[in-house]
Image (cartoon, rainbow, N blue to C red; front, side):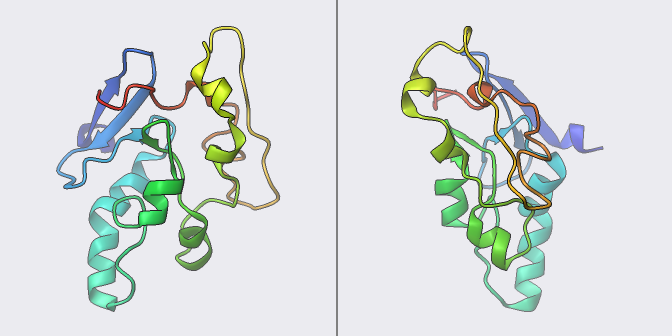
Length: 145
């Protein structure tokens, strides 16, 4: 079902990502980010917050912190710590931007690999959808794809 609601892309550098069809924001999600979460952020969460009249700025499509701190190399890969702590979004306090030094991002990924080590939180990104994923293969250096 969800596969028909996303557009999948491959960048010139070999990175893979997807976008959600009919999403106004056209956010690029890393191929490992669960499609169900992206769909929820795009269509369900905005309707929930309208009904409850609480903070509408939650998740990948609305939260500025998620857009800033949850994006790595041009693709959305994780929720910010505020959304994890206060809005019950899945995730943890591991921040991918802080784990991968710039010099690794700029070099060729053919000869080296980097993996995250999970924290003690139940829904840690490195224990769930980024478990066993080479962090140097996430995203794209070409943000204009």
